[in-house]
Length: 470
Image (cartoon, rainbow, N blue to C red):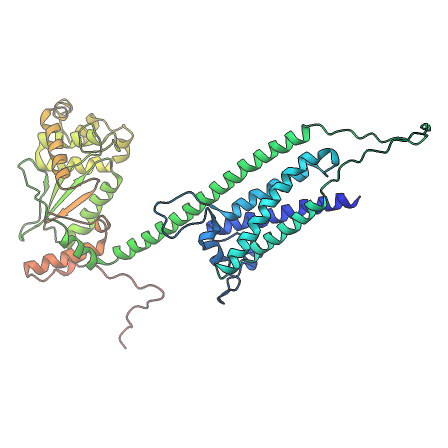
């Protein structure tokens, strides 16, 4: 192997090594970590001014091209300088591997890497000057890529082929030689075409890599913000006093009571608390909330709750205020509940309410027929279907939806106590309702019955319970 082949091989290795470093620099620039322990070890951040600090260098305005300006009026397109370095070194490596060792016949092909390296050398000089004069910090792996670039440039200059010198013509008669002659064949254009094709693929791959890295970094950032938000919401949800303050500060809505409104009767004896719920029979959370109110909330008030039901089906077939049909059988459920009220009164409505939620899965799949509901309520099927399709039933649903729109209801369930909206986080938060019950009994100036009080949380292994008396 001649010296030229060795130097050509070294140039390829240098280009690949610098490209690998640039690859991980791009990842660290975009995501904050390269994902490789050996690389991040070389990027340790020093607290000493002017010391090695990759984070400072990669966060500087000069780490992208074009460089960011302090008074940039609008966001402009920037790409990491390391990504441009990745393209630069990979294109050099592909060209050198594709075109082979330069020869006098291929001098034209060698002008490309020499011109490319000339631009690269100027860039290295510029960014080294920036790194040691403007940023007041330096990056070890950035410095390594610039050193490899200088070595690569030296190797390419060394490989520059000399011109072919014509042999001097001899006036003497040529002698027949018995030695075999070497014929130099000019190379075809096929290697150049394949090399250009490989370069195009590499550019496309680098662009996809950059977009994918940026997309992954944005997803990771968004997930981090989402998890932080969820954690803050959970902390907020655990504070019943804060939820109560938000309810007290909510605007008061006028929710009139009409003769046909279905109201679950309150227990006699005390002034009941008014609770209005806008609900949807196909909504899973509405079902959970209905069960929660029945089993957990009403006992805290000893049954002294006037619970009024309002329709707000998320179905454009009967609710013009719904932006889209989320529950395609919600209007069917609302019409069946209204038909039960029209035929059997208030009690029949609440029986239909409980039946529709109990068979919500069949309703969602379109398997709950009006005849089945009528049979479950002991109502005449024919009269039930006629009541469902009557203008009165449809108008009642639409009036409820109009009232919900006026009260800024956009989804279900939506609960109002005393005309004020209960925060969504408090809908099924037992400690909030316990605080509401304390407020209710204080207003009545009546000691809260012991059986309405919330039982204390059981002690955890880290929190021992009360000690027994000696």
